[in-house]
Image (cartoon, rainbow, N blue to C red):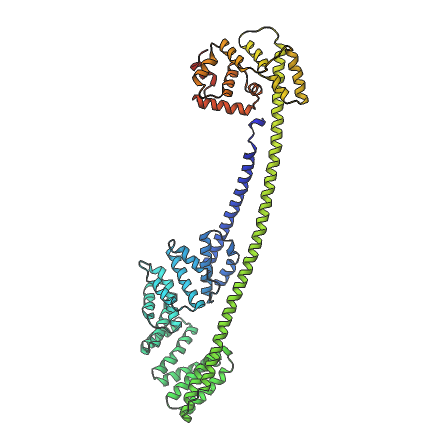
Length: 557
């Protein structure tokens, strides 16, 4: 029945709830996809950084709405750039990760803070970044497994910058706590460099010889070559010139034309000069210059920074003069290279900012378009909901009108057929059919169908004049037929029951059905049900107990 259907607001609410639920599901699904992509990229970030970055590019950072995913994204991206050896120009958001993880995840917090310090050093030139790493590595109760990452970065920086102050204890700490065998050899090499630049060449040579022996044992020709090349310079520093020359000749015999040939000739030149063999030293330096003619300009500048010093020393011994022009040329070239590097870095930063601004602009445009689409969809849903409600409401009213007409028809027929005098409830019912406003109710809605009903009702009793509804007479009849029922009802419950509720109870006593009660009182059947529930609540009648049974007990009649 139409009266039992949910009203419009429920239909509309269901539509909105469904729409919101769909968006939540889509959002959850998107977040889950982002989480899966981040997990895959993180697992590849160390061993396969290029592949990890390709996977990470599937995520648009501005679309990350979950804080944990956003922090993880910036951490992984910065880690990838660090593993690739890039300058981390676009990783300023690593600070967001450090702030997010500070009190949530110690491991990720330390890694994020370490990478943030790297960013400050490489991009901003902040020398305090090394001090930041020291502070991170010395946090109270920091597990060694977490401190290793920061200690590695600290040791690498100090080695790269030839900053031996405080580096040796860090390297030794790494050797003692890091069980990763692949790193132990690198720690030994860093320790060798630390001793070397601290003028403890003997200790440096001891470590280097061990590394050479290990490379021979492991049959690693490339590592053996690197370590023995380092040994040429250490032997020269120790004054063991002949050994250094022999090792250099060994390199030239086994690997003629290798990428370090110009440096090997330069080491030979230095050894020969220190041995007093100036003419041979000059020839070796000329060979070094000849080999260096084939290298790149950037590498040549680095080579010349050493070769010109030797040339200046040789010239001084030959002429007694020192010329600064060649050294000035080197310094100017290095200065130019520095300016060029700074310019390229600034240009890269500006390009990165332009790309980011363009991306944000496109994202904002896309968001506006999406917002418009969502508004259109919501407007469509609202219009559809209103259309559905109007259709359902019209159908409900039509059904109610049909039910009321059907009920009226039955009541009119009852009046027509019941012509003999009756007593008791039937007499009351007959009288009330005339008294309780059937004609008035039909007359108030002057449709063609109601006019026909009005004619039928009028033909039942043409002598009906005066008020069509007189509830006082009805209440008197109820009291007369049912031993003062209405008076006692009003006395007991008149303070809690409304007039409409008293009328409904009286009609129930008189034997009228819910539909008939609705027609007589000009209310819908649904409203009658609601009022009956209100009566139960006010009178304290249990839901399963019949109202009339309760009244018979509390007000016998």
